[in-house]
Image (cartoon, rainbow, N blue to C red; front, side, top):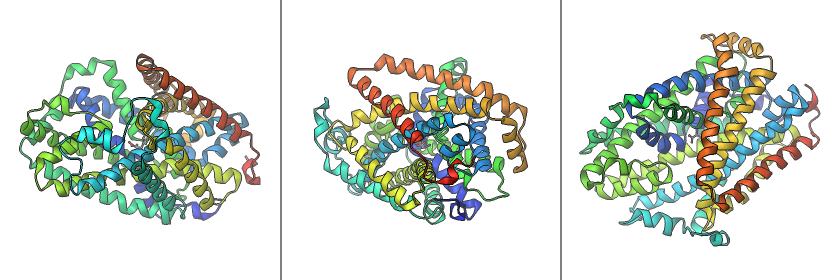
Length: 492
Ligand code: PFF
C-alpha cells in the first residue's frame, strides 16, 4: 500500500457501495427495532432524523473532507498535523481493531445459524439451544479454557473470508464484493419485508412503529438514544469514511455522496424494521406472547426470538430463515472489511508493508484474539468488550476527533474542500455543530454510558476493562514510537 493508483476507487458506485456496506451492519438489523420501540415508536423518528442531519451527516462530512484532502492513512494524517497526535490515531485504530475481533465472532454465530436454519435444527427451545448447544456458555470464567469447536471453526471461517477480501486490490476486493453484496442484501430485505407483511398479525406489529408517543420527545434519554443509534449505525469515528474517502479520485462529489450514504443506511434500517415488527406481530398473534416481551435486541432477537418465530411459521420458514441469516452475514461481512481496512492502511503506510502481507498479519493476530470469544466464557467476555469499546472508548475517540478537527486543525480548510467538491454547500452552521454541539452530545452519551456501566459492573467486567484500557494505552504508544519504514511518512 504505497502511494500508487491501486488505492483509488474505479467508480463512484464502488465507493458508495463500500460506504453503505460499512454502515449497514448488525446494528441496523437488530439494534434499531428495539431502540425505536423502547423510545417512543413513531415519535422517535423526530430525534432520529434530527440526529442524522445535525450530527451524523456532519461528522461523516468531517471524515470525508479530511480523508479526501490528505489522501493518507489516519496515522499519517494525524502525524502530519502534529507528531504528538499520532498516538491518538493508533488509539482509534486499536479500538476499531478490537471491535472487529468480537464482531467477527457474532458474524460467526450467524454463519452457524445459516446452516441450522435449513432444518430448523435449533428445535423447540431456541433459547436453551443458543446458550447451551451453540455457545456452550459457562456461568463463570472456568469456561475460558474450553474451546467451543463449532464457534472456533466459524470464527476462523469469517476471518478467512475477510482476509480473502481485504488482501486483494481495493477494487478487486472491497469494491467488487460490496458492489455484489449490498444490492443483494437490499433485494433479500425487500423479499423478507414483503413476505412479513403478508403474515397474519403483521399489522399488530408494524402499527407500533407508526404509533407515536409524543411525551417521549421531552425525555433527554430518548434524544441520546437516537444519537447513539446514529453513531453506531453510521460507524462514526472509526476512520472508515476517512479511509474510504481518501481513495476517491479527483472530482468526486463529497457532500452529495455523504447524504446518499446516510439516507441509504437509515432507509435500510427503517424499512427493515417494518419487516421485523410485522414478524413479531405475527408471533404475538399466534403465540399470545405480549409484543413488548418479543422486542429484544442483539443476539436475543436474532438467535432466540427469530428462531422461535420460524418455528411457528410453517414451511415458508425454510426459505425465509436462511434468507434472514444470509442477510445478517452480508451486512456483517461488508462492515467487517471496513473495520479492518483503516487499520491495515495505517500499518502498511507507516511500515511500508504491502497490502497482502499486512492483511495476512492483521487477520492472523485478529483471529488469535477472537479465540477468546470461542471459549465457554466467550459470550460473557464479548458483552464486556462491546459495552466498553462502544459506550466508552469509541465515544471518547469521537470526542478527540471533534477537538482535533474542530479546534486544532484549520477548520475553514475543510469547508473549502467540501464546497469545492459538492453541489450542496456547507458553512458556518456545520462548523458550529462540529465545534460545540457534537462534542456536547457525545459527552452526554459518554457520561450516560459510564453511569450505566458503573451501575452494572462486576469484578470480572472491571478486570477485562482494565486490561482493555492498558492495551489501548500501551499499543498506540508503541506503534507511534516505532520508526516509520516509509520515508514518505515523514513528508508532512
Ligand atoms: N455500522 C455497522 C453496524 O451497525 O453494525 C458497523 C459497526 C458499528 C460495527 C459499530 C461495529 C460497531 F461497534
